[in-house]
Length: 390
Image (cartoon, rainbow, N blue to C red; front, side, top):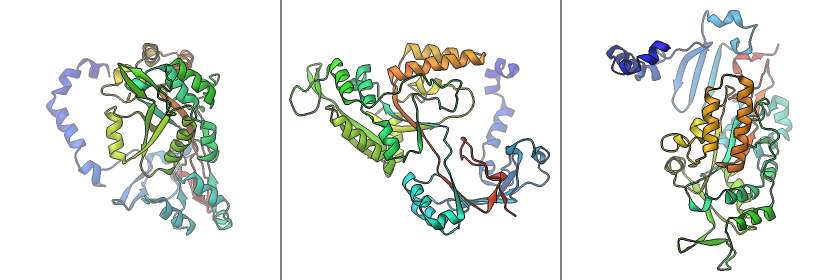
């Protein structure tokens, strides 16, 4: 590794290395099963784009001898077939007809309906493991309306997260105070009090930020550079997502009570990505999947990541930058946990975004299987350990 780092510039122009990289990234290593290999228990058997992928168990796989040590060394099914069913209604029909053995990412409302069905209960078990993720409402700090910290804090008090969890997620979500998942008990800042839904407190903060209703139209405003600016904000979300739409509607209804007008803007996925990457938004519904490895938020919340990283909110904070830089090189685990708690406190106060919750996955697995294990890691179950009941 030391040699690679010291000779990095020379490696960039190394012909043999460039030739290898070009070959390794060629189409055959992406599409031809003879060249798609990995160290896991299964290999590609067949692939019908947009329809299905079939995997078969490798012969004489090296991990077989370790099967008793760890769940992830088990490879019991001789073949695993994944079907692509993009339409949720069609997927439910296939599940109810037992045409599939496992279905994940079921909508909350559909999941509740399934559990009320006697026919479903006869054939399937339900699982709701927490997901290692973070859902949030992104705030564009480059927008003059959102630059004031008190305005952002007021908006956080206008998002009724508990109501959203109850009404939209049917209770199947865990509230978060920052980007670190509560399952990371050593570094999750459990002492931070989440923003409570409070219209009065929000109104007070908005007044302190200079927002009034000068033209008496029911929407707060203020004079900026000689112009009257109304506190109107667009909430962008992926078109077709009922969950994100309903969250926006709840936010819109409650914010109106404090004089904040929110316009819902359903946006096609590719267009939404363009808007977010171009920092061309007021607010957007976002989320990311985290990992069990040590937390590193350089890409998300460091000022250096605004132009070319994932800091789409335009969040600039010397406090956060300093903590992130220290955390990245700190080798002492306990010290790193403490620093991450400090970082969460800064993010909670300054609000690069409004942190919401981590959803529970909703999974149905046929009762004919045993050795069923769920996990916080996606896809939240380990199918290679499944075996048929006697």
